[in-house]
Length: 171
Image (cartoon, rainbow, N blue to C red; front, top):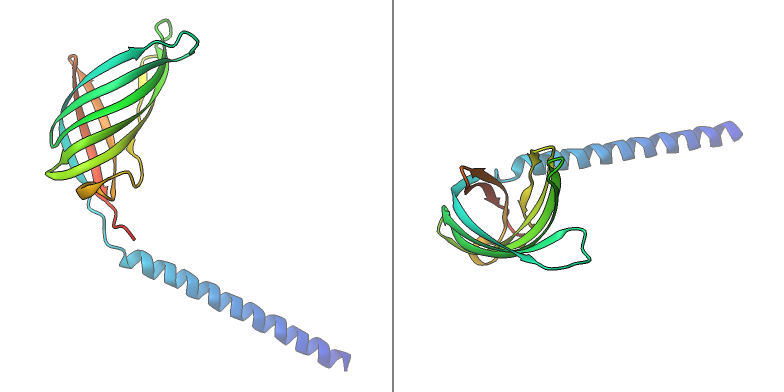
């Protein structure tokens, strides 16, 4: 009787393992199927120039400088932006960093709306590392679903941008 009960328990365990394995395979298959069915997201590039006005804000107790940002974008992005920046920099080492948030309002390749850019950049001994990203779900109107990354270029004292972006479908 004990060997019969042991055999039954063994069959139950084996069947349970098979059920779990089949379920896991089905889930993996579903994930693969969903991934192949996803609509391919097309990335678009916008280019242009911008003018920026930074207005220092006095805070005697702060370790970092704070500035107001006022920009005018031209080119594929016709817009204005307002924001704030915190920064620190060492002239002796050429190292520093800044973070900023700015709201951009205007048109992007003719699509009207606004979105938020988040900056996080460092400079290590005069070598910059930059990240300027659209805050998820910050796009409004015709810019709803906007995602992307912007590169800021400073050459000969002039500012320009390259903006790679796409639109996510909203659920």
